[in-house]
Each structure stands twice: as structure tokens, then as C-alpha cells.
Image (cartoon, rainbow, N blue to C red):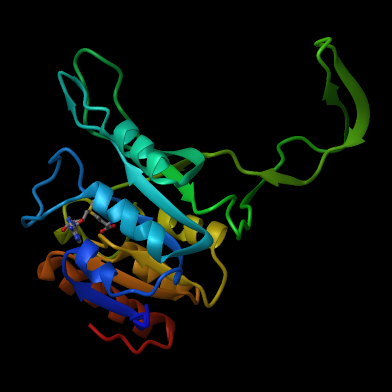
Amino acid sequence: MSAKLPADRLIVGNCVEVMHGFPDKSIDLTVTSPPYDQLRDYKGYEFDPEGIASELLRVTKTGGVVVWIVGDKINGGRTMTSFRQALMFQELGWCVHDTMIYQKKNTPFMRSNAYTNCWEFMFVFSKGGPPKTFNPLKTPTVRSGEEMLTYNKRPDGINRKRKAVLKKEKTRTNIWAYAVGSGGSTKDKVAFQHPAIFPEKLAEEHILSWSNEGDIVLDPMCGSGTTCKMAMLHNRHFIGIDISSDYIDIAKQRIVASAKETGSQLSLVA
Ligand SMILES: C[S@@+](CC[C@H](N)C(=O)[O-])C[C@H]1O[C@@H](n2cnc3c(N)ncnc32)[C@H](O)[C@@H]1O
């Protein structure tokens, strides 16, 4: 395909149709959250998860990653939409590199007959093998100094230990917790005109983990533009698509304001 990639753009349209115009193997990373189970009232949409997953497979570079953030509606029982979508990606040929958890530190939605649900999946799919980029985020190790550490467990089941110096920091776990809602997800008031944003920090941490400066980051259902804003702030190129022109207007306002505030170079074509 000889099509040119529309970098640093916000595009109104059905993402499957818009992605048809992208070249093969041109995207490094996608961070996105689809509408699921009609949990929110968006401004009318057509949502074809399989069409989106197939088109993402074509446009993603080998070793590129899709982070797909999805939960389930709870209506009597859980719909299990998240599981169905993950299995669908795997059947199409995506590698399920990780099933991460997005934990919400504050959630007002109580259930009278079950524990309060406080998380969604963040499926990390990679194309054609392991991710080509992994910049692990670290966390400080709580203890320090020397300690007897387990170094081997053979089939005999015996844990062998040896004295070793603890490292100052270690790679984080795959459960990430964020404050949500106003003041938590973002300080951009205009973003809350969208009914279902995810936290800026969530997008930022995936962008830092699975891409490098200069890479192309896509959000095919970008809503208020969270992924695009964080990609821009970390010197990645971004492409945001949403079926609603109202949401693309919100994304545009956030990105322009943030570029102004930080002095980022931006030639946004919408
Ligand atoms: C969960 S929201 C994304 C919110 C976004 N992550 C944010 O932080 O603002 C899902 C979005 O998908 C959009 N959408 C639904 N179907 C679409 C399609 N076929 N093509 C493009 N966008 C679509 C909706 O308009 C909605 O804004």
C-alpha cells in the first residue's frame, strides 16, 4: 500500500474505515479503550471489535503493541465481554503478551450483593512475537542491604538460598492503580465532557513502556484525546480517531492547550 500515514492528526470517522487508508506495518503502539456493553451513552457509534482488531494487525509494525483497556458490564452477572475480546484478538493471530489490571483507587459504584468492582483489564497484545520495545518502569525496593534470596527451585521443590545484595529498585508488577475522576484522571476540565476517559498517567505509563521517542502512537477510539496528549508530551507522533466530531473537538482543545503550556512543537492537522 502506498498510502501516507497522517501523523500528528485528529481524525473524525469510523476507525476501521480510516485505518484502511494507513500503510501496512506503520504503527508502533496503540493505546485504546473501546466502548463496551453500552455502558456509556456515546454520541451514537458503530463498533466492530473484530474489524478493528484485524485492521490493527495489518497496520501495526512487527513487534508493535496494542494496549486494549476493557471491562465488563455487571447486569445480573458479568458480561465477560473483556474475555471474549481478548480471545478474539488471540484467534486473529495477536500474541497475548500480558493481561494487566487497571485498578481504580476510588470507585463510587457499589454492588449490594458482591464486592465493589474496582478494576478493568489492560490486555497487552503484540504482533508476531514479543514486543520490540520494553522500557520497564521501576519501583523502589522496600528493604535494602543483604538478604538470603531464593535463587533456584528445581523439580525436587526445594528452595535454595544464597546471600545477595538487594537491588535499589525492581520492575513493577502488572497491576497499576490510579486515582480517577476530576483531579485524578486529568486536570483538563474540558475532558470531562466525555463520559468515559481513562487517566493520563495510565496512557503515559504504557507509552513510556512500549514505545520510544519519535515512534507513532495510535488511538483509534480516542474520545477526549488522552493517549494523543500524552504521546505528544513524550515526543511521540500521535494519531487519534473518533467517530464523534464533538469528542474530536475536545481532544483538539486539550492537545492545543497542552502544547501551548509546555512549549511543545505541534503542527496539528485536524
Ligand atoms: C471509552 S471511549 C474512549 C475514551 C478515551 N480513552 C479518553 O480517555 O477520552 C470510546 C470511544 O470510542 C468512540 N468510538 C466508538 N465506535 C467508534 C468507531 N467505530 N470508530 C471510532 N471511534 C469510535 C466513541 O465515540 C468513544 O469516544
